[in-house]
Amino acid sequence: MSHAARGALLGFAALALPVSAQNSAGPSLSVFGIPLGGTAADIERMAVQRGFGGFTDHCQAARICRYRVNIENLPGTEFFSTNWGFRRLADRTEAFSFAFTAPPNEHRIWSAGSDQSFGDWFNVSASAPILPDVLVELRKRFGEPVRTQGLEARRANAGNHGQLWWAWDAEGRSLRWTRETHQTCYLAMGRASVETGLTLHVNSNAAPVDPQPFLRARQGNCAYAVRADIGHTRGMVYSLSVRAVDFKAGHDAQYRTNQLLREKRGEADSARSSHNRPDF
Image 1 (cartoon, rainbow, N blue to C red):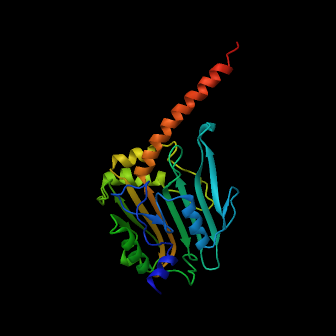
Image 2: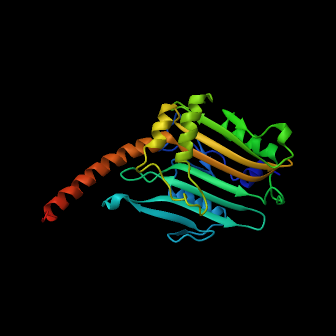
Image 3: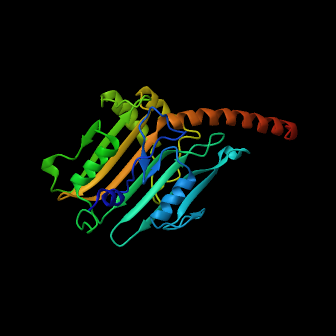
């Protein structure tokens, strides 16, 4: 199998150069070939290549689903918060999700994820990649991970869950994994990374209104992070999930969104005060 074919099988494409929403000093990160900082047009091109249909506001299999938000029902704050999709094929299933920055920012991706499964622990499909190929590809794209677990040689023939982590500061320097990193970057990733498919959290997007992930990320000096989860058995990968987050872009976007919300709340309160007089 060629390198290009193996990369397509794993759901990766060559890492694109950073774009405007991503710090040029930071790592260039992508999911299903779409870079953080990308747009809905990038998602549509990817979806066509992978056999998905166009956009729909009512989620269906093999379509690009999108979730429209109007923050606090304030005018001028409506945007598509997330785009996601899923499809089931004979030999695999796959799903993706992308979270966008809110107005007044450009509509850009700051958090992204992909999931693929190739059968299951007991019945791995013929299209499943082998674990060494996946690990080589991940290291080629993201460098040496700062943390790995569940990939020990003694576990290679059992059904196991492995995890790899990458984390960088705002200058693009790889972070050491410490107790502080675990208590900041690790928890921030859990709050900021997207869910895929049709899960309960698929529409969650921290960038517009939830400061907690960014506060934790800043405490750990964590500007960018990637997590890969691998289900493997007998040297084959039956599930592969990748999550990538640009905390800096999400934080900067949220700051500008909060400025807009303060302005819009003031306008709404002024109008309400003019028309809704108290009557006791």
